[in-house]
Length: 327
Image (cartoon, rainbow, N blue to C red; front, side, top):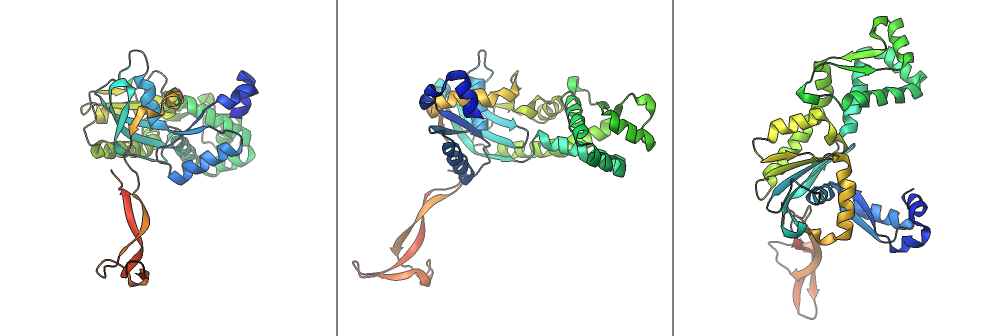
């Protein structure tokens, strides 16, 4: 699809000069990144660069006019997407270069998990009436999800967490009215109390704050700013909770005007200048197997062998470390 759209806009002949910047969560393994690269090349994307999403967001905000992130800042990037939440901490240096101060981290606790929690809430509250409706009206289920999203993105606006209203499809309203679980006077809107809304949001938001706290403590230097980006970063309730937890510990919690676009824009910046990320902290320990003089106190006898050229006993398959996790 990406190649098709590109050809439609720029023409097939320009594709040979194109660098494809594919953004992935920071929590992805090297194997997952390699799989993404090989799949991209298999469909014709030859010059492929993998870009970590929170790094892209960091670069984007630094390069915006009037940027709130500048040289000398230590920035904790909290990238809250739909599926994953990713975190990195950067030392911002002259010329837009960043150095990583803590290994990137993350978890599957993005905005889509709040959506799933809402659907689970509906099931708990309305039971078989709701589950039977799901089976009968799959298209209306999609409409309900869309209406929930409208409510989700305004919850917490202005610091208010009062009850919310969710418009529901007529088919669901009829089913609930017939079961005497909803009044006809409700005009096709369900009331979700403040407590219910928090019960939907809080397990996910609490996990995000746990990850942020761990990243904050892992940084080699205390972060001076927290950058909140990603699609779910547009949630007023999430912003409110993050600010309540960290505003007294960092100089500023920065939320760009379009937090969901920061990753895409930053990926282009990285693609044009991959050296913008000067160093990263190793997520894993890397090394290779070598043969060394046998030491019975260290080595398993099953790997012992006679090194004929040197006339000594050696041990095979000893792990020689190039870089340790955290370096």
